Length: 190
Image: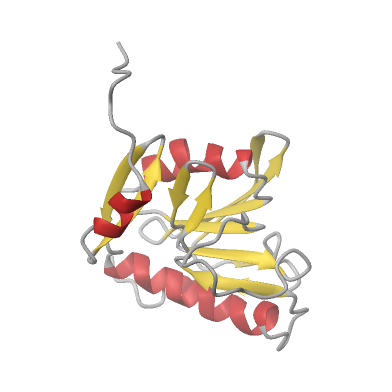
């Protein structure tokens, strides 16, 4: 039985959340997650460092993107904080300082999976990203050393590729460069 009287979380709940937690609103519920663990943080940082020069700055690649770590996304009633997100500059040429969050859905989002967030990232966040017309999502698992590349087709996700280990890959939408996956796990000791 659904409790129709339950209180839906608000942005004030996000603002009141402890600073050491990542606060999101999913399906009306406030979700608090600990800051990323070391393997998670290392993989996210390495990925951002690899994609930034060729896609954000155009050094060794086509440029044309705004890439951000942990942007706060207000997508309809949900508030999500992906580990990384990217907007093509033709959709978001610059960022205003009007709001401390983004209401324009990104073109690409990356969730770095951890044991405590993987189920929510897959079962709850992916449908929201599809609803908001995010075209690509990457799921990076630093403990399993995998990169799953998903492309939105209509309202569903299609797994384009699953890469693992120390492969060198070209992964949509950043397939203009070869990405050495070994760099993502270089600082992760299992």
